[in-house]
Image 1 (cartoon, rainbow, N blue to C red):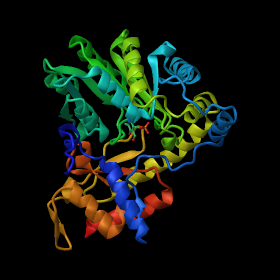
Image 2: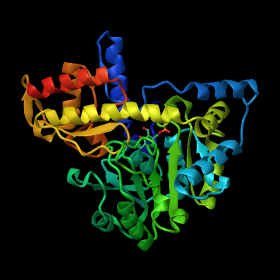
Image 3: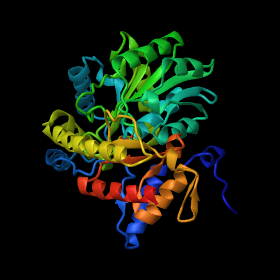
Image 4: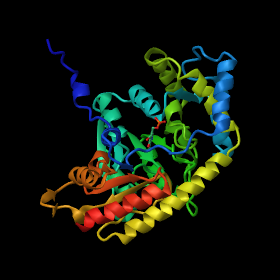
Length: 397
Ligand SMILES: Cc1ncc(COP(=O)(O)O)c(C=O)c1O
């Protein structure tokens, strides 16, 4: 007998970023030198004081189950950080610590969405949003934003997307994959519509600390009074502290939502790794100069990537205010032939680039935007120099 996979999982697209990274690894294993711009994880090591806290947690015997929704120390550290950075006051009971922000989002959608509910998701979007929404039987209502609007959802577009089934708006600022950021005013205009239509807003703020000079981050819940009652904030340590493997993320939500997510997690996964939770406390409460150092390095890379994209004929991108991605418009290069192979879409473009020049990127179609390719600049300046020289050669062929 061949077991039949459930309809809901059959409809699920595997993560394209992970698939491209796996392909790049495969080629590396086969002996090729691959310049990997596909994965969204900082190339720095986790700061030493955070690793030390993990060792101390193990020595102190914190190696057992914790409360399913997270240890009180970490919930308090999260609340203190939002208070200090954004003046927002939350109760630790509103925090649910999950196995990464991806899992936190899964919790949010599972406890809030019913089959048929619609979630407005501006495209380009992070690869997992639409798939995680679909897992609940709800429907992603994708709204195509424009490069000339810096890939930001306009109030007109939001209004036009709302139906009587709309339950939620999903925002990500700074954005993966475009690096664009909403100003407080822009968020305010979207918030007004969310209030008018009585919608929930999920604000993925995981790149909050990776914001480039000249840009200002605003947490969604701060842009109008009273928004916290309809907002779910999503955050984590992966990107800020180079802790992708530790798997700690969290949500701050209205208390009843947090209670439901805690209950769900108690059945699904129990607590996130106890040792990682103690390391995350050290990350949030310890010295923050590591974050500044990483940001300074990312800033240099962002400047290099911006310059190189502008220099290469036929490529362009929106300004990157935060995160560590460039979403490159490659549409002028589609519909052409490279050494006799016609390239019509971003998947073919990325696969040919990998095959001919050993540079791994991710096709825009995976982020809901054909005609683009995402590069991650979470890699060294040297790798970026070589990669862009190769991209330049590729498009010149
Ligand atoms: C926008 C966004 N949200 C959430 C996540 C998930 O992060 P993690 O599960 O590592 O905390 C990522 C990771 O790439 C991301 O880019």
